[in-house]
Length: 204
Image (cartoon, rainbow, N blue to C red; front, side, top):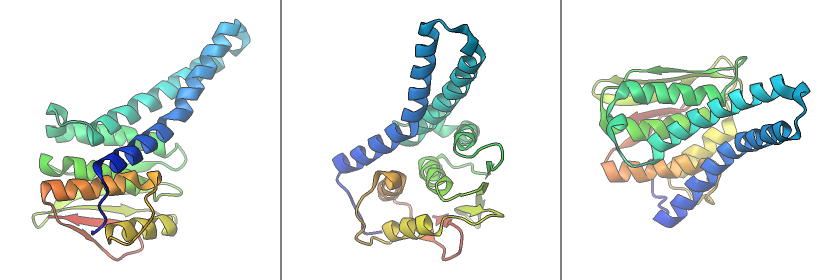
C-alpha cells in the first residue's frame, strides 16, 4: 500500500464522495417542498412518501459518514452502535429486491473506523445484493463479501490496485479506499487482501 495522498487531497475526495451520495435525496426533498408551495394537494401522498424516504436515507447516510469520517466520540466505542449504523447505511445502498445484509461480530473499537470504511468499499462492489461479513478469527479481524450474484469485477480490481500502491489516478468514487489507507497507517494496522473472486480483507 504505497499510495499516499496529501491530507487536503484526501479531504477533497471524501467531501466529493459524500456530497455525491446525499445530493440526490437533498434534491428530492427540495422538489417535494416546491410541490407543497404550489398548493396542489393532489400530490400530497406522493410528497409524504418522497419526504419520508429521502429523510430516512439522508439521516442513515449522514450518521454513517459522521461515524466513519468524523472525529472519534463515545459512539465509536460502542460496537452495537457501529453495527446498527452500518446496517442502516447498507439499507440505503441496496434495495428491497436486492438488499445488502451485514453479519457483524466485532468487539474491538480499534478497528471500528477501518471496518466502516471497508464496509463502504465493499458495498460499492455489489450489483444485485449480497452479504458483508465482519468477524474475528485467530486474533485477526476480517471482512468478506458473499453474493449469489456476480460482483463488480472492475471495481474489485480497481480497489486492489489502489491498495497495492499502483499508480492509479485518484477518483472520488474510491475515497473510502484512500481513507482506509490513511487509517491503517495512523493506527499501525496491517491489511491483507486475499486473492479471491470476492472482496476479502484481514486486519491485524
